[in-house]
Image: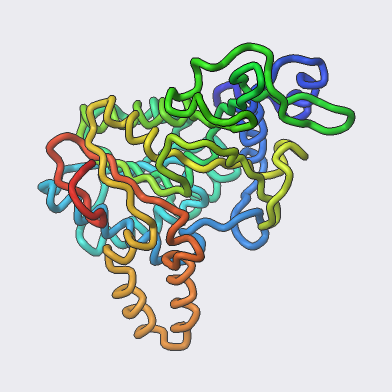
Length: 354
């Protein structure tokens, strides 16, 4: 395992010693410790993701993959997942794919947490683990799934002050950690379209996310395949502080208890799309999760499951509604596909590639 960011204790020590710590470095260090030391998912954890809500979510992704590969001529491929949680999504998707005789040559997970690696192998024993996307095999087509992956990566935050834009830093004031404007001018680091925002405005940029997307898209452009990105987010550029923390399914202070809460930000899908295009890949339009799942046939799958288990019909409908309804995950979560040049248009998105 590669050397990682400082532990929370080291992080707090560095901040107390007045060493500069950006919000981005703070998120990286805190989340590295958080994910390495626990399984955060489910009722007993801090949050629940779509695959843990219902098997239908992973199954729809499996159907999407099988359909795309069939229309691409059924090439040999590998299944890749970035940050695969407990492996639940992969297990459900692979099972659905197998019904269409769509079987990957091998399965690769990009995951650094020892705790989650163990959970993943319990569900997908054939998975091969990697620390980084650059460690993946560099030959042959890949289907890459990234569900709630980019939201946990670090972002830089910039705040408009009376003296111009400054990067947000984290410092210790009495017994608390707080974000404060840095001293160095940062106007050139803020997207040009947002530089005239009002004093007090906050802008986020995600260079780590863009780099990972660019590297993944470059692989697809060179080797063939597709990437599916599902996350909560927006189409930027936009002003706003989206950093949030969750513990025990409740919102918490992002700057309290570093390494003991889940830190996330909303994903800028426009920035990810730009990074993918710069690598030569094609990019779909952005769909809401609810619309995408309905176009793929989640309602038909619900009916099939309810017919097989009528005593669970209401439970299953409740699961479907959590995934699709506008007041649940249906509108907040977005879906985007990245495909290799010449590959068919992916299902579930209205219109042609943008």
